[in-house]
Amino acid sequence: MINDLFRVDTSAASDEAVGAENGIRAADLDALVARGRTVHDDLLLARARGQVGFADLYMLGREAMRARESAESLANRFDNVAVLAQGAEADVIEAMIGALAHPFHNLLPRAGRAGRPRVFQVDSMGPDWLGAFIDSFAIEQTLLVCVSRSGNDSGSLVQFAIVRDMLKKRIGPGYQDHLVVVTDPRGGALREEALREGLLAFDVPANVPARFAALTPVGLFPAALCGADVRGVLGGAHAAAERTAGEDLRTNSAYLLAASLHVLVAERGRRHILFVACQESLAPTAAHFARLFEETTGRRGEDGAPDGPACSGVNLTRDSAGLAQRCLSGARDTVVVLLEVESAARDRVFPKGAPGLESLGGRQLSEVARALSTTTRAVLREAGVPVISWTVPTLTPTSVGALHMTAMLGAAFGAGLAGVDPFGLAGAARMDGRLRRAIGELGA
Image (cartoon, rainbow, N blue to C red; front, side):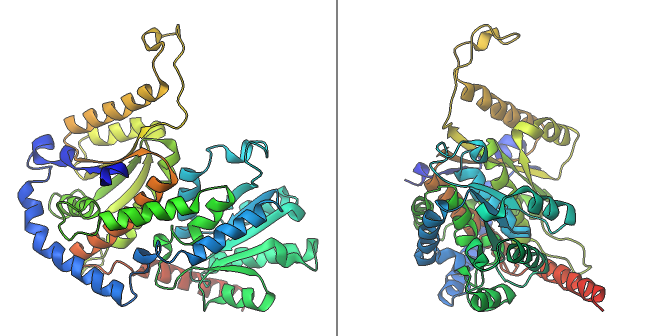
């Protein structure tokens, strides 16, 4: 059953839960069924033409397995790994490591990390941040991983140029053993440099935009360096793809999520979607899903103004008060997607006699954490805020793979319902073009 992987529950977003003016009516989804079938058929056709690369990643695992095997070999050679990435690639990497690695992986002794290196992400080309990184590590014991799906974005090329120069100066001949590239298989400046200098390089299919790259070496290689089970992730993605293959948006969980959000955005004016992580390990995933849905389903109207949802990631433990304040202040533009985990991997018994909390003695800490989710759900319902629950039984490689595949399918389907190209991203290209011109002026 798909419930073994995850559940999407839209009952708290229904008109019965939050009122007809706020929630989804059954008729709203029924009215989308015919359109949904057309979108489903269009996605199948695009997939057959090789335009929907993310949907086949779980079946094209050769590169993922090569990344896994290389991670096993490299893990024994280096104490530190620094992953240099920006934008959507950085979000993907943080989401995968956050959900799959020990929360304090880098603080554990090497034995506690099963011999794995410490893995850090450097997601800026700013001189203070990048300079501080360069000054912080014994480079002789560090592997540098440069990640750019296209291999041409300016920020990643700046990072690559700086760290390669550092390696050449500090290590000299053989510096190539400390540098890995994850990029386009055929084109781009990073691929050209990897070929010219004989660098270890992993392919990111050209038909997979960066925000859809969680199941490529962009997300899997850094996670594998932390010891993540790559096969488990791909297996979960495979299971989710098989179990969300139906065309009916009322029974396909990925489509139900997307269709519900479409109704709330387009017909109820709920243009701000909050992806709320109820467990800290999923906070980076919530932020990544927010980017995925906003950039995939977003568009601009005829006047150039935004005409799609604005999406944000929220950490419930850290931001519960702000979330409540936003919703209780009368904001009518918000819908909440709760990312929940039913069973904690590391539970604790609450001590007896805790000051001010005597009644909790002997209860599980996970029960206290769930109380926050339950309270939040009740507050949102009272405020008339639609809530969609997206729940996994436990946080495992299988469930993480299933979450990402479902999110990608849902985002692509939602874009189709909105009449948007799910794989375009004019904003990023425009921004990088302007940055390139500005950099070019510096050298003029």
